[in-house]
Amino acid sequence: MTTTSPPTAAPTPVADRVGHVETHGIEHVPAGERHGRPSSLFWVWMSANVGYLYFVVGGVLMLLGLSLWEALIITVVGNLWWALVGWLAVSGPAAGAPSVTIMRAMFGIRGNKVFGAGLGVAIGIFYEIINVAFATLAAIALLAHFGVGLPAGGEWAVLLVVGVLSFVIGVYGHATILALAPWFSAALAVVFVVLAAFVLGAADWAYAVEPLPVADHWALIMLGFAIVASSPLSWGTGADYARYLPTDVSKRKVAWYTALGGFLPAVLIGALGVVAGTAIDMTDPQLTIGEIVPAWFTPVFLGMIVLSSITNNVLVAYSTGFYAQALGARISRAAVTVITGVLATAAAGWVLFLSPSFLDALSASLELSVTVFGPLVAIYAIDIVLRRNRYDGRALDDTSPASPFWYRGGVFPAGVVAMVVAVAVAVMSANTTLYVGPISETLGGADLSAIVGPVLGGGLYALLWLNTRPYRDRAKRPDAASADIIEADAAASAHRTEVLA
Image (tube, rainbow, N blue to C red; front, side, top):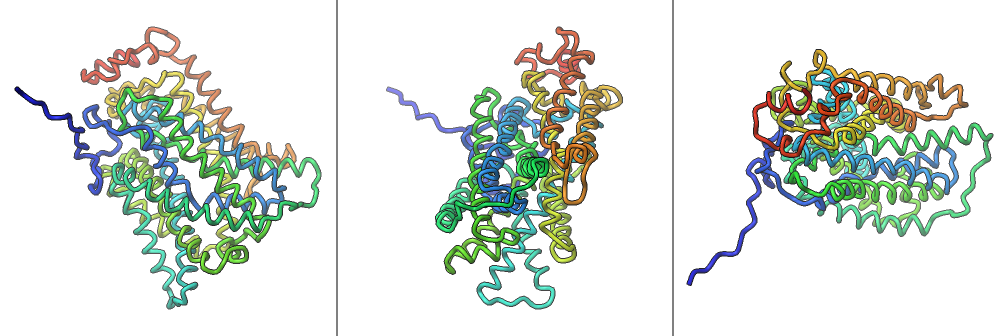
């Protein structure tokens, strides 16, 4: 009589193991190294978004002069853009590649260095700076709370420690991020639940603001919407964390777990910041929070700021490393993550200790970032629809002039034209503390950038895509390619012939 041993789970590939530096960069992940479940994405996005930034953004809405209920509605509506982030994530399992590699299909090999990788590095470092700055301010306040005085220049030492902690997990990569995400999420969620009890107890539910002329009122509403929308629209990197999932994974689950992981904490914590704005001055909540919480909770709150800023930076730093690699850097993802981290930490020091107003710079930067990333995310989302999410990861790795994504001189005109036009119009529609566009001025100061940019970018791209060869020819369109072509191990030339001949 023979017996059979029960099946054992396949070991996690060496390229993606907890506690080991991930070896994969922007290249295609082979099918044999795919693993995991879509549910893991929820915890990844939850851990990155249970963060202090949303609390600050909720407070900014109140500082604008909006009513309590207007600010709450804007917090929900502005974060509906997370549905688009979830949709972008479905391209990860299809291509087995990060978002910046998939963007070569939209902009071409050379075009992507500007509109995918270039913009991605800029925005990524910007958010890294925000997170390092928040964590450093909170760490300094935490030391002061315990009576630890800093010598001259000691704040720079705190900045350095925060910088190291902010980027070390991103260096280890995908598997380590997935393993730590649930623990970070749980710890931060507990703190925010306790904070919510204190905030709700101190809230002024009869809070009222001075009435404004109708035009000015709507201008503030649209400005608030742009600020809230800037956060989900900055995450054009959903594929980065889904690319290790098997090709046949449920696209619906990938999209839902990604979207909910970002939407739920963004709305709940943002709403908490709004409600807190009825009781305290939200110009500097790190200091004023002590007015509505007991003394023992203040260091807990400050510690939460440090941890949440670091956890958000984990995902930001990880994706920024991919963007930098796609610029043509011939070094590993881990090394690029360290380099961008050093730059971000140095810039955070300038913003914190040398610039005049951190909060004003933050608000203006958030308002302007949506003018760039709104069109980019929309173009990406429409491309997934047009190609029916059929991306050939191996062909996307080919950056030579023989690549099917070389198009015309390395540029895909449809993506580049749509991006340039949409960003230009979005910038002209923006209203920030540093700049007011001519379209916004004409509309009485209304900021429509968070709506105009994505709608115009996605719509124009679809129009140009459908009227550009080879897409007009049904037999040659990517959505006519069969799934076996996408996963075949044929030579790159065979892929070029069948995918984008």
